[in-house]
Length: 336
Image 1 (spheres, rainbow, N blue to C red):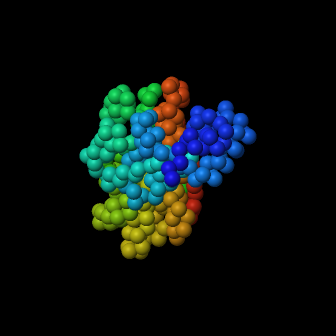
Image 2 (cartoon, helix red, strand yellow; image 1 turned 180 degrees about the vertical axis):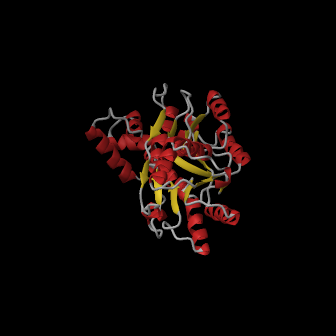
Image 3 (tube, rainbow, N blue to C red; image 1 turned 90 degrees about the vertical axis):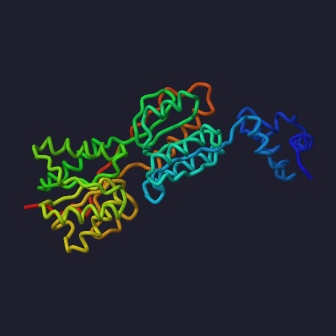
């Protein structure tokens, strides 16, 4: 038997409108009435017709999340924050892995235009700010993680890459290091060149000449970090510290050092970014920059959902969160 709202209303002795308010979580329904309606819903085994409801409202109750690389644990924690917040607000989440391909990112943005999803969250996107703004100006709900975009309808959340990168250099110089390698990510990533900017700013403050040969591209993954280090070793140039722009590349640094017999931290200090779970289980444990990844995902999901369901968007839509340099074994050795 197909149970309808009117069946629930008749048995509970209330109007169908009251049942609808209970189903939608309306706070104006008295607690006693709400309890009575919920008991009848359970007794009758009523399930609301979500498809019909969404067709009437022209909503899919779905959010898309575009990430550059699903294999990176950094994005896994962000996605978990997004998914948990979305679920608490009755939204489902579709994950779109673009595998660091900008064209694929644009293809997935087509889900917005086709109204397959109600909104889209881009985590460290390759898409230019101007293009993201154009989507928003056309009425599409879009939010960004890892970039600062000044637009009243584009929620964004980010950490100050330049600031914490300079703090990494401060720490390494304080230990006596002057020949510091920087391992960058792929060229399109804002995180990559902002962290490079912080590295350069730190060198300049301590009057350390910039050496282009100490900058290598590790593509934000373990194998890229490993290959970058092997190229550096092949150059036979002096360096005593490595700042990897994420922990995935730092893992590659550890592998290259094991194979070449380089001891961390006695012969080479290593710093990463992201505070991935494995970073504290490495030997030695990895000094890294912690970012509140789960919170970043949850906050941006909440702001996007608020935007999609409110007549007026809240004034605050740009959030800068703090990061923290976590000192561990990989930088505990001080140069003499």
